[in-house]
Every structure is written in C-alpha cells, then in structure tokens.
Amino acid sequence: MFYKKIAIVGMSVIMAMSSIAPTVAFATDEGDKATTSQESVNKQNGKPSDEEKQQRKEKIEAALEKWEKLSKEKKEEVYKLLEEEKAVKIKLLDKMVAFGIMNEADAKEVKTRMEERFAKMKESSEFPLGRPCPKQDRMDNQIDKKND
Image 1 (tube, one colour):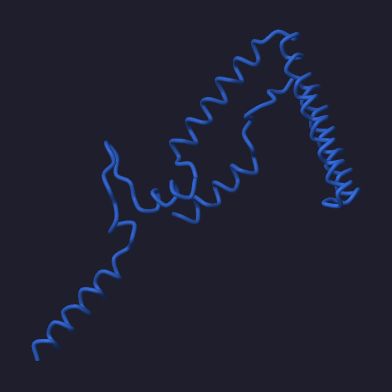
Image 2 (cartoon, helix red, strand yellow; image 1 turned 135 degrees about the vertical axis):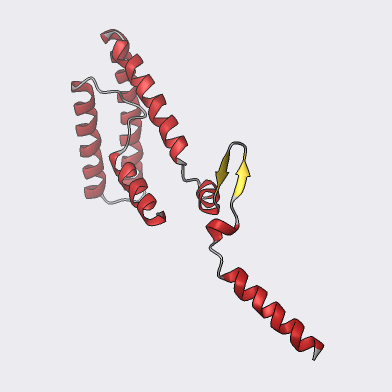
C-alpha cells in the first residue's frame, strides 16, 4: 500500500513537471537581466541575441561612416585587394572544374555573379565588408516570429 502511494505521488510530480513550459521552468538570472531557456538555446546554437544584432549593426554603421570619409585613393587600394581576392576565387573555381568537383556551367555562373557584384560595388563606391545581409535579416525575423 505504501509503495502505491509513493508511485501515485511520483507520477503526479512527473505529470506536474512535464506540464510546466521550459521557458518558465528554466529561467535564470544572468546579471541584470533574466534569460529564458530559449535565449540560452539560441546562444548554444550560435544564433545572435537581439542585443548582439544591435551591437553588430552599430559596428557596421560606424565602419560605414569611416569608409565614407576615406579618400578615393584609399578606397581604390581596398578595391585593388578585393580584386586580387576575386582573382584567387576564380582560380579556385577553375581548379574545382578541373578536378571534376564542379561543372563548367555552374562555375561560369558563379564567376559572372562575382564579377557583377564587384563591378556594382566599385561603381557605387559601396562599403565592401560587413554590410548587412538582407537574406540573413529575413531569416532572423522568421526565427523570431516562430519563437514568439
């Protein structure tokens, strides 16, 4: 009889614990702010928090301001290095075709996109590094909506 009561109490506790939402059950206090388990999961999966996204955005904006203040000669110096990098990437694509890893048509398409992006970037005097990725922003927004 005693074991039946313990089993009933144990089952009740297990059922009660399983009905508690993990976000509520595992909230922790990290410094000044409470962190839910979902935020902890995002950290473990390498997904940036809203605060980290904001910090990244601020850094990019600061770098963009500095880029805008550079002389034309300094920008050309950066573009020259980027052009050298593009040439190495094209050689890599050619090697992948030669080794049969990639077919010629796909490599040509990638090369064309690289050339177009570079030409557009240079023509518009665009900041070449760390610009926000619209696709990544859309993906982050979709993940945020699912988590809400």
